[in-house]
Amino acid sequence: MSSKNSKTILFSVICLIVSLAIFSIVPTECHAFEITIDVAPNVLNLHNNGQVVTVHTDIAYSIVQGSTVYMNGVAISSWKSDLRGNFVAKFAMDEIKNLVLAIDEYNTLAIVGITTSSESFSGSQDILVINNGPGK
Image (tube, rainbow, N blue to C red):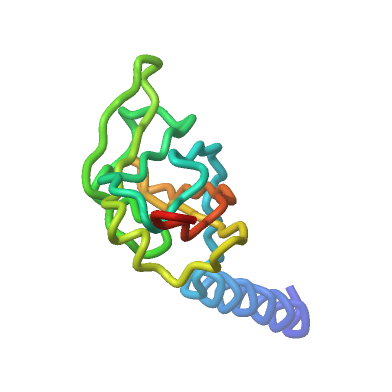
């Protein structure tokens, strides 16, 4: 083998090693998979006396790390399985009411969480927020 070919091969191998090293330390972007959610109540009256906002999902209860679930930054209060085996999240209504919400408009409530296999998931729904007190 000629000296020129040896240098070309060596250069190629070094470039490959450097490329592999760079790509192995640069973090890749992680995307959460989408789930479908159904928020109850779907009309949030800031004057009601409800205790919880319930979120029904289409993700299996058995694969969710319940303590990792948040809605718009509010930590989950409790969780359970529905009759179909899907995850149901419950959030303290007073904490949801304390979010910055636009009155008489639709607001997006979004949940995020992590599965038992460390995958991120998210889902969102728009709900109407009203402020109807007594006499309104």
